[in-house]
Image (cartoon, rainbow, N blue to C red; front, side):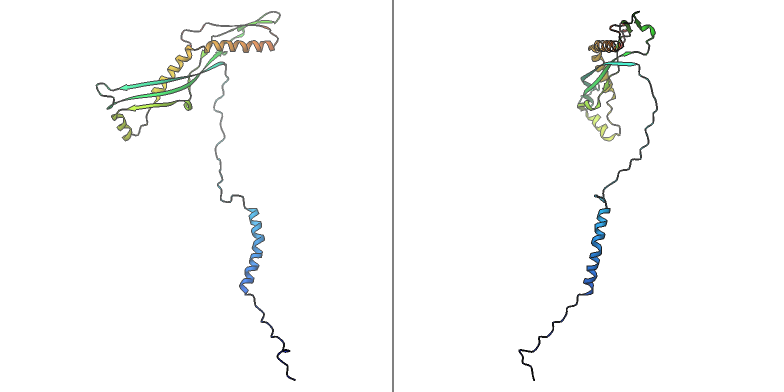
Length: 229
């Protein structure tokens, strides 16, 4: 008996085949994901950063010296040095130089304990009073601070500027700084640094002696020499 079109079974749909290359890609991705996670955990935060290697040598002690000076006061001084160098019979526009330097430096007043002997300290029989004989305070050399010192103005003649352009020697300001040191040292000598050093040294020794049970302390300073700095 022939089947009617209504009862004829529907034809089966053809099964799609997944291309082999897609399967391989999926398997590869599945394998790479955990490997990528593991690799990301192994790599540093900045894989292309720069590493600094310090191969410097260990510092060596070249000299060791005991200090026998008590630096009791320090002063900071400042001066503007205006120095001009002229060429005779030649206008300054052609040849010459004028430089203004602002120099800031410090100087210490110290008491030298190196030459003291046992006779410098006289202690009473009961040990409650003492007399200490000390040399006069002296001034140390002036130390110019390079961070606080600078050339304010420099005016040079045509000859000097041409020499700078064609020459290899840089501008030498050593004479200018030497002059500034002399001016600062003179200012320190005229200040009350020595008097402050006497007061601070006396207070230091009095406090030290008081801690040792000596209540009455007299500190005497020698007269400063004429050429003492």
